[in-house]
Image 1 (tube, rainbow, N blue to C red):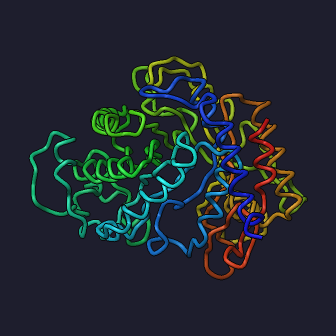
Image 2 (tube, rainbow, N blue to C red):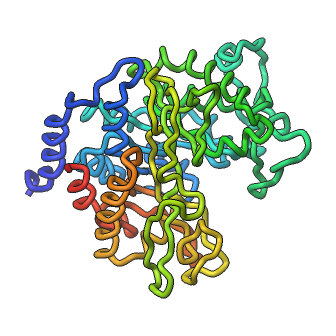
Length: 407
């Protein structure tokens, strides 16, 4: 019986070994083909690296099941694996960082090619006041070292724009030096625990008063100068919700790739049915952003990921939506979670093929773990693995993801 219980883990390690070294190797700037391979094997696994006591929404038990999912499916890019949306004071607990580093090391021991993505978002809360500013953050930005904590008020837009946008939290202004200190601290800390990618969230909101991207350009130059020598393979991949225009300055993309929600279109008269369509809402299919990427190569179409976004339920869950963002009244991952098991598998197949056919620059970021908001009861973490006593909200899509990643 013991051998049988260990078989799935052993099989996952064999599959990993077979894939290791097969086109995912880099040290320094990432070649286009290597980046494309990573994006074609991407999943969203929100807060996977975050230790259980620090999970923002709900609980996240039995992470060994998700370790098996990563290794067994051949996943190479784990999106949103660690971040903060509020609760910033928890970062003062050394267990937050040590627990995350241990889990990243556990996966890297089995498959050193896996990239974990940390995320910094367009949200700060007063709890940042409890976090000391490390000396290295000042130094990385070329600022005099001070003995103090971060200052929430100094991160905000001076004219009050977006203050209280998230209730107690606000959108920080990238032009504010304090915001740059905060983001430098988060990014550098995520890289130090083993992350090799950083999602920058809605840069257009934080850069509302930076229309030419001058501040973002200067900031990311300093960030790269600090983190690249410290990163596992001397390069960190940056992306953001750059929309159809991306984040382009003088023909250069400030990010290595783009990312955006799927933007699923409802099929009128067929409840819960949704399709992808170029030109629907503000979707980025076919954007063809020509630019030079930070790794040095030129492209006629900046590579991108599309994800099952989560942003909450509408005022009319289960009914047609008119805003172009919700799908039948739900955010995208909740809509997907509510589909029948058969429809989940069919839709992944459909979306995977549709994106490949309509826009080769795009890649579907598969579900792994993400917060579900149905509008009834508390939010919870929906998981891609099979349901169990410890994982009641499992979706059991591992087989389909493995199949698609194997193509």
